[in-house]
Length: 220
Length: 220
DNA sequence: CCCGGCTTGTGAATCCGTGCACAAGGGACC
DNA sequence: GGTCCCTTGTGCACGGATTCACAAGCCGGG
Image (spheres, rainbow over the protein chains, first blue to last red):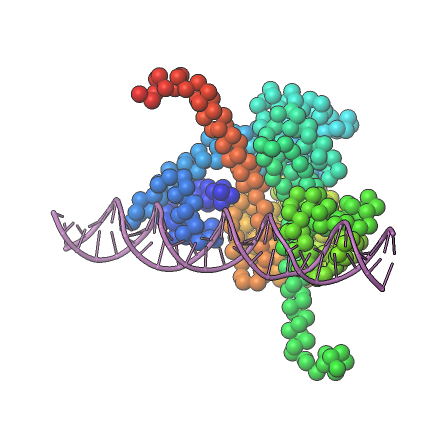
């Protein structure tokens, strides 16, 4: 379930705040979802709640981490040392959350050798060596769109089995490889869509408010 | 529909490649979805296909852009000039796709004044002025988690009606405000979950492959 | 020891998105 | 002008996710 990471995040916050027990109702409030959904999701992990009391925060965190495979760090390798790749590597959020950057590679020789976020950029030909020596299972694609499929192929060939794709391109991979796509432009376009609908709604209500104005000229 | 931006992207690529007509089957192939789904989605815009022929790429691009409200640029304002904020501002992808960065703000005085991606960092108190003078409708939250709700409140107070939240926190806003959340750690954790399942599956099959080994010691 | 209140866990109903299959319709070729 | 082929647009059935509602169960107090 894609909601477990969200629960994990908010449970960790509650734990840091000193909360030791929590009910499904409270979790639901914090996660902005239905309480029954929370209980179904958590019951999927096993019966770890106490009726009449709720869930023990610390134990629940451990169980979710176990289910998500977060009991150890996962090294990631970033393909593409352009703007986005540098940004992701420099952004410390990955390592903090258990996903240290194990390497960055690029095709361009002039990028190879520079240091980004404490990691040196290597040539994409070294990908297999990096993946195997550091036991990397997750690859991040931060190339321009047209190069994304090549990057994916290289990652798969090197032995990576999960891919996070930031390029605005649909990539294909053999069966058994997990792929997730995050497209910043798509997110903004969806917001734009909502803005657009709001603008249209405003216009309709404006027309309705002054029916004569549109009625006189157009609707006859 | 959240798939329209994907169609738009691939249609633009096809248009640049000189393709003038395309069938729902071809779109489905490129978007890795079902052809019937493509037709349903597109019929939602109106009946813009020609039976027996397909869709005219250029016209379809225009219609999708119109539906998504992409007929003009939308300025965005970024809240938070930390690692992630700087990365997003420096990443040119926003402006290229019709979402130029109209401003960056932060609470920390020592960040105010610096130049990132050609835009100067201003204090968050100037938010309202930036939003109103540049007619900004979309805000991007790139703060640490604990500050995200404050950032959202400030954006709403300044008149922003759509928010893209990169902080690992669920934020709430008044009814009528559109919110989307992108959490890089969540994406990686979902991949980690799949890796975990793969690892478990490998272990089970290994046990099955040598039934005696586990049978002798444990299952008695 | 028993009882009342509170919360979990889950069967059942419902809803939404998906995919199939086919009728409607347009274009090209004869 | 007619016929055939191809593709769209859509009614319908299926399946999974969501939500409701309630029985089961635990804890604390009397």
